[in-house]
Amino acid sequence: MKVIASFLAILAISTVTSFGADAPKKPKMTPEEMFAKKDADKDGKLSKEEFLKGAKDAAKAEATFTKKDKDKDGSLSKEEFTAAPKKK
Image: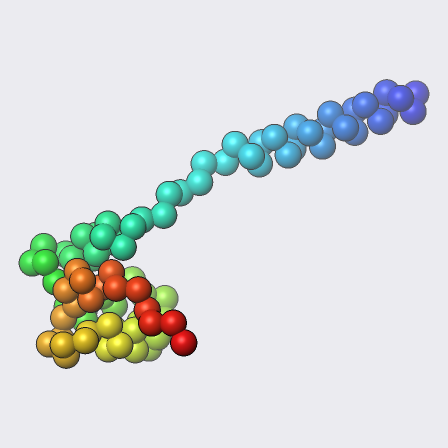
């Protein structure tokens, strides 16, 4: 009886873990793909409004926008948007 109970327990655990492995993973977007998605008017640059749309933390997103806008023209070019942050 113990053998059957042990076998069923192992079978149940392996079944549960195998279903978890089959969950599809959402592929991450590249910075270029993200830029294209955010560029609603397709003018090749992101306005502050386009950049902030959908942000979870508006204050943090606004600070990031200001930091990335190197030429201070009020919009982000693809190069500004995709540039990696400087390491400290």
